[in-house]
Length: 419
Image (tube, rainbow, N blue to C red; front, side, top):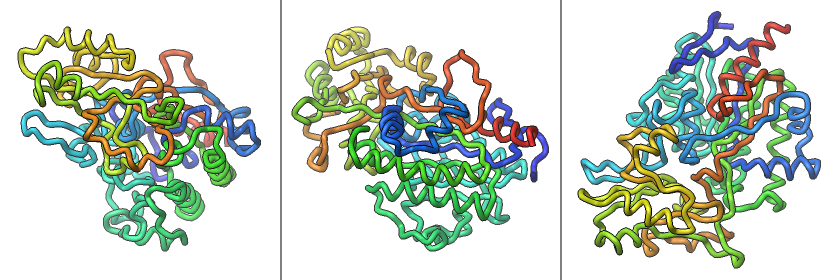
């Protein structure tokens, strides 16, 4: 091992792994997906891991979106520490709405950078490129101790910027389409090749929820995805890695009995109550890949004009049956551990089968070829937390998905002790 002592990142101490410590983030993995596939005999490796290792449920961070949760897993901390509280950000001072995928928005070092600084070999493979720069912050690629590349841009990855030149050629798999199950399969295949040939000490594999947005757990396409994953998981397990399988968020149907999207258009309501464009609703689910969800999720924030009776607006929205929770900024910061300067005056969370939109005319839902499935709220917070080793997990406080590497490195260290 190149490192001989525990690594400290964001006031958490991580064990020195004696074998590779891997966390796998199955994007959008509602626990029912695993239950269905296992019941059909399609995931023998994960079934064994659940029976002989550790099988728990954990909570994601809120909002239960991709960027906040991936960065929580990468830092071991909630958004109030690392600053990434959505895929999308509104800056009231400039009036600009921007993607929150630039490293300048990150307020804490990743545990990957801390392991790298300690001398470890670190590998990160993402499905979409939007996460790559954030997850790879602090890594250098000039000494063959770090690799961080995406399936989406695998044709054009370079040694200097990603630690791996032409990743698709290196792997022997064509660069996948961004809206495909193959995008995630590329991640798994790369993880197997890296573990076998490059032998990282810490590795993070994170996928896309394209399949989960399109298909329910009982549909054949979803089951085929998890059957595929299990075959790669078997290879990682056979090579002796300590593995934690978790997710960034769950996924719920957000449509009615006819398959039509269920949406409450809050900008339209606020325009009616406060005047057109007086308030501003921000949907943090927004990212460059909206074909499969139409920018509709279960979490939103709103900036209100000065002098607004905020308590009245909260009460009026809370009275709507579509809403599960409507709270003030201060309560949201406290309950959901969010950075106060990056959310609006109120925070809204919709019910299990409902989403929140801005104005009806601003959402193009023509590309939704299947009934809407989405996430972002409290009903999508419960995620799997499965390890191929027996872990001594406390019953309280609530286990979090961002505990993944804390326990993966602990399991990898125990492996060294047991050996």
